[in-house]
Length: 85
Image (cartoon, rainbow, N blue to C red; front, side, top):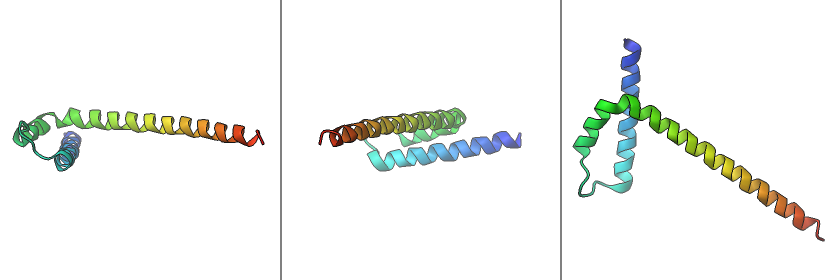
């Protein structure tokens, strides 16, 4: 039981951190409701945090693979240009 409470607290902290970061970047515009967002975080934090972490991890791996592919292409073009002379 204590493990679930700790998990929930960690998820809530993570979600509120992400929500705060979103509001700092975008601001609180007309049509947004920080109160409802806070209630949603409190109710659904246990599932929102793992999904966000998973999506972030997938995005990071994808960007790393794309950067690696670009670097290999660049290295190939450079070595190909060196052989011309």
